Image (cartoon, rainbow, N blue to C red; front, side, top):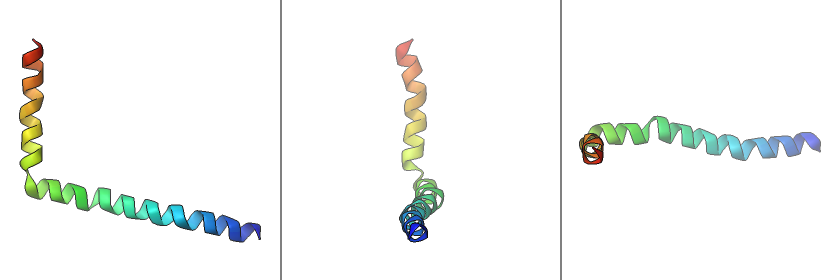
Length: 54
């Protein structure tokens, strides 16, 4: 009984972690690199922040 409980508890988190890892390591970065729009905008805003503070 204890083994079943451990496997049941280990399965759900394992599947969720696997999906998150694949999405975070494969989809998000690929989409951002292909678009390149959000990345460029972020870079332009970063240098403007310190200038405005000064």
